[in-house]
Amino acid sequence: MKAAVMEELGRLVVKDVPTPEIDDDSALLRVEAVSICGSDVRILNYGNPRVQPPAIIGHEAAGAIVQAGKNVTRVKVGDRVALGADVPCGQCNWCRNGLGNNCAINYAIGYQIPGAFAQFMKLSRLVLEEGPVTRISDTLPFEIAAFAEPLACAINGFELVNLSLGKSVVIIGLGPIGCAMIDLARQMGATKVIGVQRSQLRMDIAKSYEADVYINPREEDVVARCRAETGGEGPDIVITACGSVEAHEQAVEMVAHRGYVNLFGGLKKGTRPMSLLSNTIHYKECFVTGSHGSTPRQHELAVQLLEKGLVRVEPLLTHHFPLSDINRGFEVMDSKQGMKIVIHPNQV
Image (tube, rainbow, N blue to C red; front, side, top):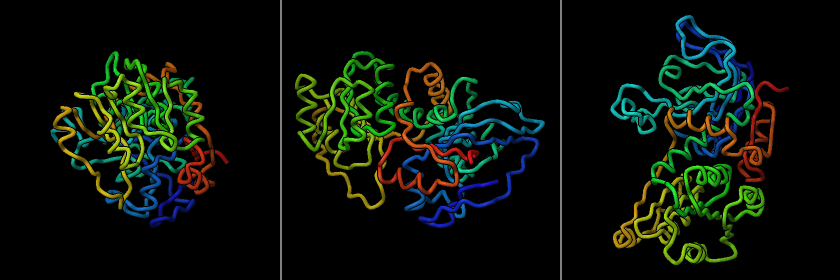
């Protein structure tokens, strides 16, 4: 089969590799769509201790089962499925209590487990028994189903900040996940959603999601405007859906008393430490948390939302490439020329 192999930092090569062989407890997935995640770009450029080159990365995927071992009951040949990333070990306290994204081993597709930038990938016994493998309907396009992985991460983030009816929400960073969060916040009960974005290209796409307010931090004081838009109190919830330490600092500064901040977006290696007056948290009695990844339960919820069209993905799918052009896809992703870049491994 053809696969994009990360041979070393900064080097991704499309080449022939052996098609995975399945055993009685595994299945073979024909990958129809896999999106490039920001973490894929970071892995390629900076590495990750869980990824040892040569490696096949990629985890936002969907496809069809083409082989299944005789002991496999989770899927059958012909099933269309979406994959998440985090695979619980199934043994530790976190995994046994439904919080596999906090597992110390932290298995993940496209990390220790060979990923989806390939024509086929093996779904091992562990992936099938513990992981986020969710059936999708015949009518849900694969490229939309692949978005269930980042959407599940957004669900995790909103659950951690107790988003509920009547809350005001600020989303800093309107990339693909930030835009989807606008729809998700509405579904979870937010009555005021404020979007913050620097890039005009992304802002133009984000406006189709109809947040109540859009703010360009190049043009005005974000903290002052967000406070003004919430009656001077500050927003109930602030999500930093971007890799900016300045956004982290602004989030704590603007959030309301008893409000929640989720440092959702990871920061690249070498970023300066966050500067924070702890008294701000002390006197506001606010809550500052982070979130990463998701659980199989949240992945199933994400698929349900996509099936019903409650979170829109089509406006975000700006670029499509065959596997042979994956390096071009990474260039577009890294330069932020588009939003969600989809690779189709089985397209010529």
